[in-house]
Each structure stands twice: as C-alpha cells, then as structure tokens.
Amino acid sequence: MKKILTCLLMVAILALSACSKAEETNITRKENAEETLQESKSEEVHEEVNVDENTPEVTEQKIIPGIYYDKEIFESTDEMESGNFYGFAIRDNNEVLVIMQDFAIGQLKDNVIDIPAWESSYTFEAEENGLRVKEQDFLYTKCDDIKIVPEEIQKYYETGELPDYMLEAQMTIDYVGDYINPDLHSVSIKESDENGYYNVSISIIRLTTLNGVGNIVDGAMEISSDFGDGNVICAVFYPGSDDTFELKITQSDWDYLPAGETFSDYRRDYPDVTVGFADEFKDDIKNNAEDLVVDDSEYSTELIFLTEKNITDFKFLSIETEIYDDGDVYYRTTKEYPVKNFSQDNPLRIKMLFAGDIPNNGFCYKDEDGKEKYYIITISGKDGSVQIFKF
Image (cartoon, rainbow, N blue to C red; front, side):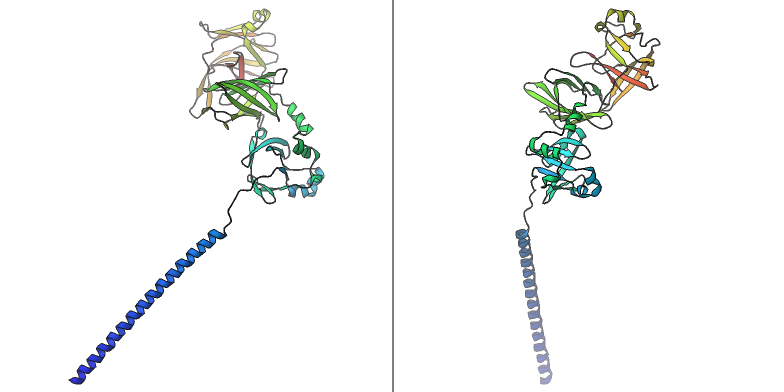
C-alpha cells in the first residue's frame, strides 16, 4: 500500500513539473512573439522614416525662354535638305512663335501655349533637355547653336519682329464682311478708318450685342467693346478650319459671357443678291422694280433686291426660327413666294415685316452653277442696316 502511494506521489510531482515547464515555454514563446512584433513595427517605422527622408521633393520645372526644336526631324537628311525647322521660339514676355509646317503666334501661360489662329493649344512639361509636348509626346530640345537656327526665327526671338512672309500672309486676310454661325450668332466687320481700326458688331443671340473696334494683330482680329460702367469685353476673331472663323472671348467680368468662351463655325459668304431698305435706292430703281406684297400691316417695310448674276428660281421665304435649350437653331420654311421676273435688269421690291430680333424672313435661289442657296434677312443691332446670312 505504501508503494502504491509513493508511486502516485511521484506521478503527481512529474505532472506538476511538466505543467510548469509548459507554462514557462508558453510564456517564453509569448514574450518572443511580442518582441518579434515590436521589432517588426520598429523596422516598419524606421523604413517609413527613411522613405520620407530620402524621397526628394517634386517641383515643377519652370519653362525657360529660348528656341526649342525637334532635333530628330532636323537631323534627318531629307528634312535638313529642305531646310525645315520645327519648334517654338519663346520670348521673355511669354509670346511664342510656333514653327511647324506654317508659322503662328501664341501666348504661353501656365505651361500652355494658346494659338488662336490655329484654334489649338499645346501643353508643355519642362525637362532637363528641353520641352515635352503632352499632346504629341514629342521632345523639343533647347537649341544652343545659333548657327542652325533660321535667320528669321532668331530675329523674332531677339526683337519680336515677324518673318516677312508671315506679315504678307496677315495682310491677305480681309476681315470685312458679315459672318454667321449655325447658332445664329453673328459678327459684322466694317471698313477700317484712317487709323487702321475696324467697326465691329458682335451679336450673341438671346444674350447681347457688342459694338466695338478691332484691329489686326498677328493675323487675328482683336476686338474691344465698352460694355458700360467702365467694363470692357475683349475678344479675338480668327480663321478656323474649312473656311470658317472662330470667336473667343479673352477678357470679361460678365458672368453670362466669361473669358475663355469660344463660338465656332462662323462663315462668310459673298451672295449674288444685294438687299437694302427701299429708301436707300434711287427712284429709277424703285420705279422699275417688280412688286411683291408679303405683309401690308402698319409696321411693314419695303426692301429692294438687286442682282448682277444669272440666278434662277428666286423665292422669298417666310420662316420660323426654333432655338432649342442646347443652343441648336433650326429654320423651317412656312411659306414660299416665287418670283419670276427677278433678274439683272429687273429689281425686286418686297413689302414685308420684321417681327422681332429672331429672323422670320429669308430667300433662296439657284446660282449660275445651279446650286441652291438659302439666306436669312436680319437687322443689324449696331446701325439698323439690313443684313443677310447664309443658312
């Protein structure tokens, strides 16, 4: 019996010893795990600190004035033989001469060159060796060798004087005329005065009419209009693509016509028909004119139509103008008035009514090539004269 008790006692002692060691092992493992975790966190913090300390501060490089060119194109044999030099001449005043297949003047602001005459812009990123144009992903290298820069480009960079052929190109643009775009916005430019300034009227349908002066600068018509109370609205009118013109507001404090807003697709047309108020013409023209009465009310007026071309199928039109919320304009003919005897020798007098600012009259005819042309008739917001615009 005493042996049995002794054995049980020894077993109990061994069991207690095993539990104690297991607990010590667990404590040790726990302590080791905590130490490892603490070391890991310490390393992470240390690495983060190192990253923050070693990462250089990113700053945008400033564009330095100078002449930049496409080195790869210039050094190609064929292009060198033809004398092509593509790039940008950026002056200290941020004016830029853009040299591509043609020349144009732009203005650099916030790393963007705006080129009104081309209806485009280029966004630059300054790099160590030059400028990268985002739109093209081309690198233009800063040219330090004056010998390879064409003389007229170097002259512009130093003095701001444009190449002769660019000045000649500017002089060939005749801005005088009436323009209209599909949204019925119009621009009317009259002959320049003795000082070289033009009389300009800008009509933004359902918004305002601006009357001001314009002059040609770098091939574009720069316009300034006194909006009252000392406020001045400025714009630039310039050739676009496919024989169209663009109007861009460049300065304005008016919320309804902010700076930067652009109106597109203005077209100028040389119609085969001249239109004016009857009292502007001599009696012999009025006495020989064929009469058409469209409206004989108290507020009706008489217009005289003349032509020097062999046009056919002339029709006076009553039209409805619909302007949708998105700005689109739609013209619908409500009635046609055919005129048989309108020709070079037979003027036409029409009694009709201008119902308001929105055009309600027009005409159409076939020109000498048999092409049908349509025009609306409006009144100038500047001088009250008759204007016609193709639609």
